Amino acid sequence: MSASSLCLYRPLITVLFFSRRRLISSSLSSSSPLVRVWSYSSSHSSNGPTPPPAIVEKMEEQTIGEAKVDTLKQKMELLGIPCNDSCVPGRYTNLLCPKCNGGPSMERSLSVHIVQKGDLAMWRCFRTDCSWGDQVFIDGREAHNEVKKIVQFSGQMTEESLRLEPPGEKVTAYFSERMISDETLRRNAVMQRSGDKDTIAFTYKRNGLLVGCKFRSIEKRYWKEKGSEKTLYGIDDINDAAEIIIVEGEIDKLSVEEAGFCNCVSVPDGAPGKSSNKLPPVEKDTRYQYLRSCKQLLDKVSRIILATDNDKPGQALARDIALRLGTHRCWQVSWPKKDESSYYKDANEVLRHMGPDALRKVIENAKPYQLCISDQVVESSDMHKPERIPAS
Image (tube, rainbow, N blue to C red; front, side, top):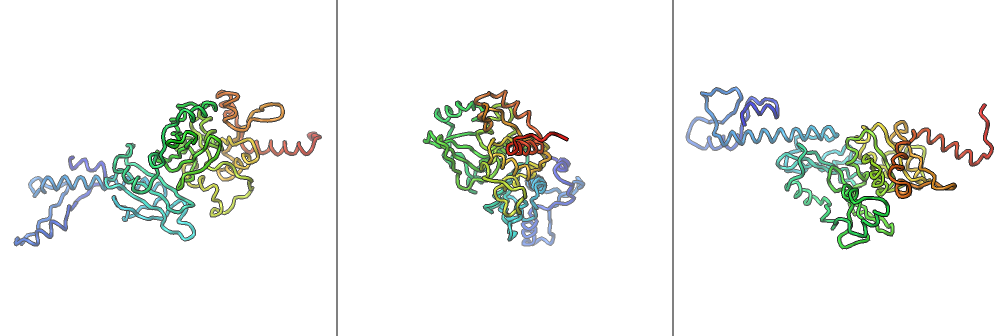
């Protein structure tokens, strides 16, 4: 690499010393009265002393490595991580987490690691009520062997550690009855426990990394893998989306995808028993920590379609989400009638009984949330007042 090309990676360095301590000490130990320190300058004369080629090569590698680290730090600072001189490749550094600010004690709970080669930085908050974790690459490459070793060493869950395998005949048949295709299962990495034909594994991933797993038996019993991050299911599908759809369960997210919408996520814990019209203090709002953990991502979204279940808990969930993300940018679907006395409950019911085209139209016909609230108030009022009040 030529000296001039180094300018593409970082500002011009007038003088760069390599292994100064080693060269000086070796020179001082000699009988020569002169101490020679090899220096490098982009403007040096061709007639002056030139360092050995091996030293020049190492100097260039060091400069490029520093440029990579600087780029990674800039990317992390955009996410609110205050990188400092202690963040060096090959070491773990504890910093203040920008998501939870270290909790009441403001502890340095964010463990940051830059790989030795400077190609990747990764971090995770070790506070249990935060657990924010993510990574940034110097470019768009897949994680290499060094990163995989670090992930395994740091206790990062993997499909192998959870003993997951592709869904077998029984699991695929279960989803087929619900109009979910094998292709959708593969794209969302829906799996099963090795040797357990009755347990579905919904893998939660962030930036391609496995950060959690929810298990569901075919008999509809749920549990989570210990250490799972509380985040939106399918969050990687909305990284660049201006409009998103939020549903109440993993199967509903898969159903919406069958209708042609991949920009859909599911809440991780279903719906609450009740809702409040007032926001609680942040430290007490633990149920919706998963919304705050991806705040920067959700702040870029201009339109949010709420497709929660058509029951009281589902309505409470929609109200809670709208209150936290802003009612002005929320829309809500209206599930169609099943018969004269009932309505379909969720996205999968509509998909199974009416088909993907009908589900797509239901989503496309969503109304502004504030209008839906007004309609619900009117309907509730009508239930208690049989006689309609004529307009004045």
